Length: 136
Image 1 (cartoon, rainbow, N blue to C red):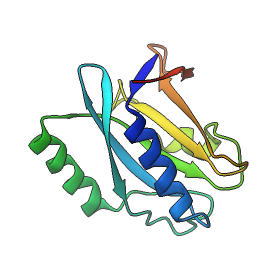
Image 2: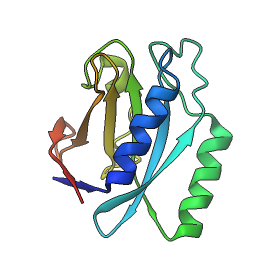
Image 3: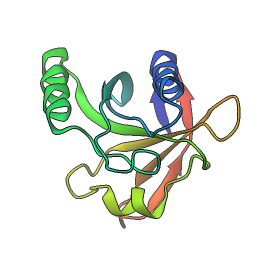
């Protein structure tokens, strides 16, 4: 189970709905097993309607902000504009469980209203598994 603040869920949804014609992306910060902050990043993918790539400068700046806030990099989020909130083949191929083995991956789908969010994590066998979300 992943514990996440209501503010983070609201921020992910707000980011996704603010740019409904492209996938959005961001980084999640937390500590003591709870995700407490969501940081927006620019999507610099060449086809942002169907994929996302973090702007490198944003990613580095967010890392600095996490350090300044005393937070750990807890995970990532992105949106799907026309599909359900489940990882696509591209999402799985582009994730990096070796670099971020404990990361949580949130996907916010705009396919239906209201938007829906699901969370995923790689297990010890590097299989992606859905994690229940506990809003705290």
